[in-house]
Image 1 (cartoon, rainbow, N blue to C red):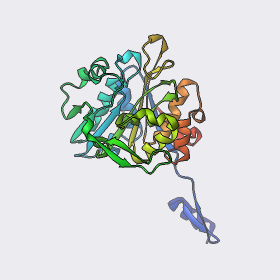
Image 2: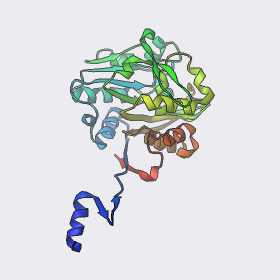
Image 3: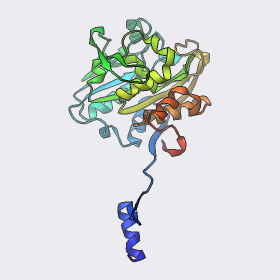
Length: 293
């Protein structure tokens, strides 16, 4: 083959054979966006649009579950829960994309009525069309075979399992046991039973759960982060305002990047490392394409 034709083949297909051996050029890096600003609804939508828009994930007539953290009887300013305006922006984008229904819920740690009220979620979603802010119905937990390294089975919430699209929306914060709690840990909110049991080997257990419950889109609320005394917090002195939102289709990459907001490296967080080892996503930020808005 002439050199000119050889280069044409490579340029058009990115796949070629040479002396019987196949060579594949490296794939595109994993993509992540970071939007910054004081309008939390706008930066959330900007972050989503930067990675291709919500229609990349949500199709007409889809049932979407948005899983924020609403676990604590805390105000948005205290940074223990996902900011309701971040979730509102995501829900609006889903409806705009043609979603049939958007469901929002969390299995709380404090009294659910107080959590939903104090967090601001009740006020934001009281009259929003096609959006259901739901309390957990315990009869809807179903035993699921996980066949994991630590968890062989566990009760998981059926509305999360049956959703067409599962959007994981944690708040970025400190955690006394795991150093940080981000998206991989946020799936605890769809777990039934005695969740305290998984603390015996929490990184392995969470990798087991996330291997079965796939987050199609991860959006991390870093509008304000909790630096100490997490996950419940309470003291505004522990809160740092960042005015940022992170979005990625890769849950591990999203967690890895958010780790840097705390002055830490992804490899310092055992939950992130275990998920990366299990092939659940990319931990190495050098392999990521970061789009800043």
